[in-house]
Image (cartoon, rainbow over all chains, first blue to last red; front, side):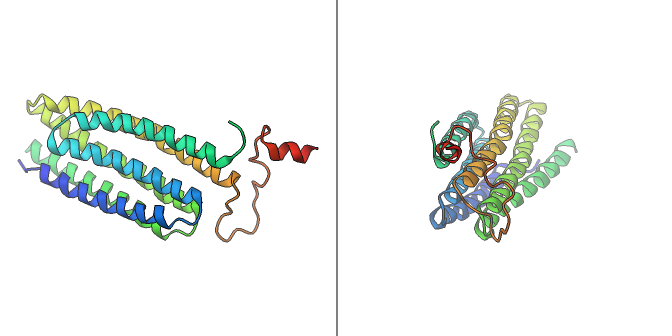
Length: 89
Length: 132
């Protein structure tokens, strides 16, 4: 039986590399929707990173937090999109 | 024997998922436009998240099969998180794209915008001014 928990820590490092690329886009973005796209991508990658860390340390609480984080970040993305459109709600 | 086969499948799923998640970051840096960046940033992360969550679910089922009590809880909760990602991610991307088009961002190199004036809401102030 292969020891599989260190593999998930390597996966978490690669996800952090992808998050770093998205942070560069958030700071470089020429317009406001570019930054919002970067933030949305970062949210999804953070959710996956929480799941990977949860399976790596065998603690279920990180996965529960990931579910709540997914729903709250979805609400924040929708609200920022509404704000960018302008007009009344 | 069964454990080794499941481990190999878990490794393959992990490699596919991490490859697509890295492509999301690279595409977000390299594409020239908001809409193409949305393609890279949303579709690649959704596809990669399906594979990484699938590997976690498979590993949890393997642990549950070999008698660990944490495995079933891990698999079920990861399935819930995967459903949350699958529902919320394309919806948020559609909202961002619609907001970008309504706020006046043109596609890169676009000559004709077929949707011009069609995505304006009826209750928005600009439409009322046009009517008058």
